[in-house]
Image (cartoon, rainbow, N blue to C red):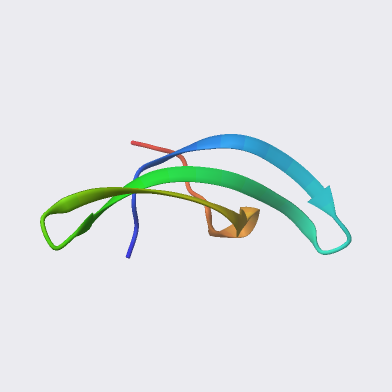
Amino acid sequence: MAHAGLVVEWRRGSKGWSALVTYVVDDQGSPVVVTQWLDGALLRPAR
């Protein structure tokens, strides 16, 4: 599932670019902030 998020940091590794992304998900009616490293190829610009 796609989420709008904020890229906090980029890093380049041996397998390409990764982004540290923070976004909010709904956990049974409660907002939860998630921060995780994602493969840069998974990201798309906001519209």
